[in-house]
Image (cartoon, rainbow, N blue to C red; front, side, top):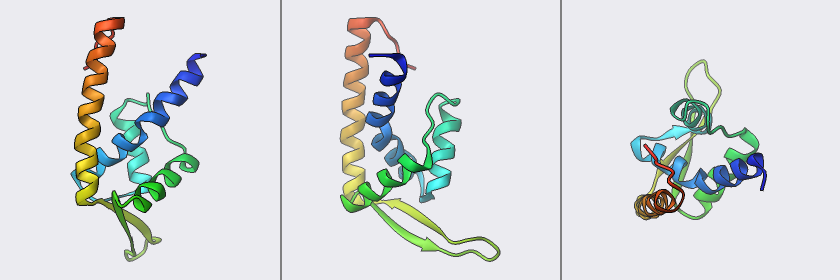
Length: 114
């Protein structure tokens, strides 16, 4: 598997936990979610709108997020997403899964995570 293929797979596999974690802090709109993922990862993880919004819609369909349109004076309307109670449960479970995975990765491949 090439590096770019590996990066795509890692990004695809981490999208849910990244989105849920940001929404656990407070409601956000899609553009802000994408921007924060890029900023907090120092540019290592970025999502194009074409992949971010379908993921948000899928999470909403699964009942993990709720979206609502908000119009602010002088701005175009935006869809803000918030985490549901079910979304919080899934986030807690995914965080545990990722912790276990990172520990195992370190034990096998000597790859430490921050």
